[in-house]
Image 1 (cartoon, rainbow, N blue to C red):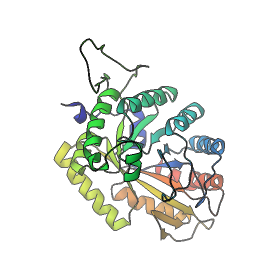
Image 2 (cartoon, rainbow, N blue to C red):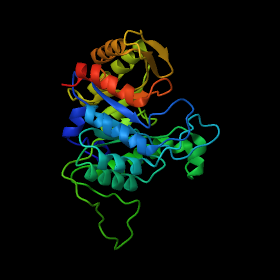
Image 3 (tube, rainbow, N blue to C red):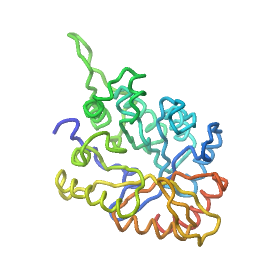
Image 4 (tube, rainbow, N blue to C red):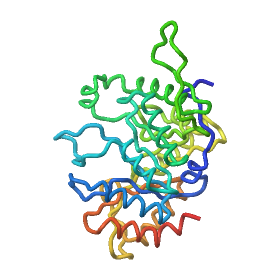
Length: 319
């Protein structure tokens, strides 16, 4: 088995988030209003602590290296390792997940060092989600060729997978004569789970062979069922009988009227909590194992939404 084909054994935190025939619910940070560019990240950490205490299974953090006038996200995101470190030091139970570190624009050994650091600070609560990025001009800014994205993703995955496995192994880019054998510290007691977020330009068969699961964006229910069927077929071809998770990032504009029916918005729904429960039950039945909510605070304070979902929705799914 090559390094790239290594699937780390299931950790307790991975099984808390991704379990066969169950659905768990997480929260994506930062929580912002539409077109909001200035974010109080101390408040975001407080919201993460609130969600952690109320029983959300995961807190997700994005990696947005650079901003530009033509990029639609105006938020000045913190470096993900800094925000993950702050969340690791201020939360107790929720998994911390990178959604997703841009594997093609960062050296995989730097990523592994960050993963070791967050996993240590959080006492084993880190899941390493990686993606490939999708903006060619950003590739150019980092001296990368976007046409090499697929190959670069696979090469970096090989190095990263070897580093976060147990035992950890450092694969250097080059090893001149007399070079020492390197290793990463602090040592880990278990492998760090490695998750594909998006496709990274790879086939679903490749993802099924190499990752603990596949995280995608929300699609309308019929398309999502088709995507899950495609995923299950790939898992059966690549790892017959094995469990590989399927997760969805979904935008949520939660109405203050519990009975309001669900209506489509970009990448999610505007809905009251009763219809949200029905939607999530349907997603679980169609094969989704985890949903992270990208909450809109345009109409209601984020704290109110987090508390309402925790009071009415989480008990339906979290045992």
